[in-house]
Image 1: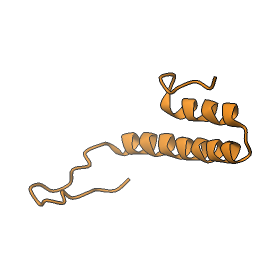
Image 2 (image 1 turned 180 degrees about the horizontal axis):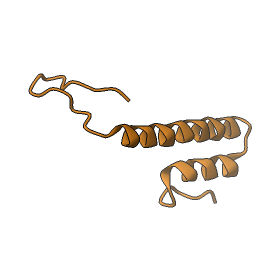
Image 3 (image 1 turned 120 degrees about the vertical axis):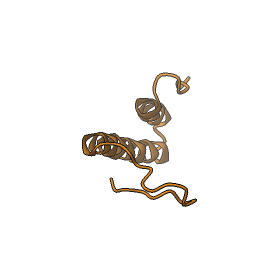
Length: 67
């Protein structure tokens, strides 16, 4: 969400997204974080198919299906 200076020192702030873009990325990351926690919980409970489906919500339909 904040400015980020180039760690090599060649230029200043390398986070050139607008505030609205930063908010959108933050919201996607928040949603995916919660989905990942659900997927891990389901996996630990032995619900492998449901867990895989949660990971597919994050990574898309190219993520392998449960067979």
